[in-house]
Figure 1: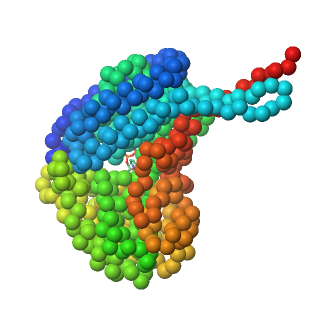
Figure 2 (figure 1 turned 90 degrees about the vertical axis):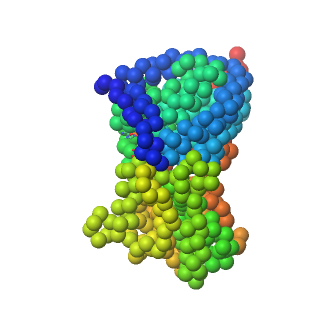
Figure 3 (figure 1 turned 120 degrees about the vertical axis):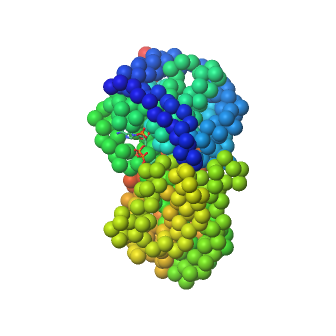
Length: 461
Ligand code: NDP
């Protein structure tokens, strides 16, 4: 297939930012071949040197935090404060995993007649498929542990948001990573992404994106028993009990769902409130939603920017308004959003008729949150779990025993109590059920970029 181009558009202004060359099948095959060649060398680089190179890569990212952040503001519509955090997260994830090469311990297992040891062997070429919602962190979460474990990596950024990935690829070379160890290949999912999944020399796919595409990738990967890490959709619950600090729960709820304009797989897009405080909670939530600053994402005070594209905005609007078929949902209240150019949508709170409403069940991926009451603890857990997803969630209560019971009862990979924080580079992140497979970040991620080899050495005769 012939290569083509893609014009990156600033979501806040709809003005073109840059035209990017898209790779086709031939370029993908060439990149995989180069990554395969580089693998032979990279896996045998002295562990201390591999760690040193990753620390230099982290330093190069650190020196470019502002440049990367500005690129993400114009190329993806992220607020400048979020974008700085995201670039800093790339640095931190690289620094964290830079310590791993020298600590990739195997085990020594007692056996009769000799010595038995295990090695954590790298897999080979890893294909990393990144979505448009968090281009920098999600690239880092796959890239850093994969490189630390001794693999080489071919990254396919989302077609809409390739700019920061391209720059990070350049920083890797400037930091001294050998050619072919990290390759960034902008292109379409249906071309480059699919080729990486089907290419026999790609030994693992690390994918973040929709459950629909992730399910297809898992089926295709099965043909080669290719390893996969999948980080997919979510419909996470924010469960507010009557004994909670209601003021804090209401003040923070907008940030648990409207961050990144709701384009976040961890968005707490269902708020479950104990019936006795339901009305009071909504009274407190209304001013909190009204005060979310939705404005030019380059503005230091911006708390929410535009959606990524006109198509995404229309998709979100259709969930709220229906498709002209009278299937809209009741809107409780809304915040503001700029008028005019840009893919803006205001923070919106809706009251579904019941748990069967589409907006209660499907991932909207926009600044819309649905609120329903629950009766007691058992009811709250049942409602939180009544979804095909299981990525994150929050629990607001002052009762420690209840917090732990509910946290153990909710089927999700990342839960927070009296907080909405789901992501730290040092702790595992990933989904239950159809939200994914495998764990990123923390100590767990390294295991999914290596295979265990067992070696027995006879000491007899
Ligand atoms: P996709 O799942 O289509 O895209 C995610 C990544 O996969 C992109 O890099 C995409 O490439 C690539 N891709 C697409 N098709 C294939 C394929 N057949 N083989 C290999 N790679 C492929 O998500 P969308 O961008 O279409 O978003 C749709 C919805 O998915 C969102 O509205 C949201 O609900 C959900 N989503 C969830 C995310 C999460 O973090 N959980 C992230 C993104 C989306 P390209 O973009 O170039 O086509």
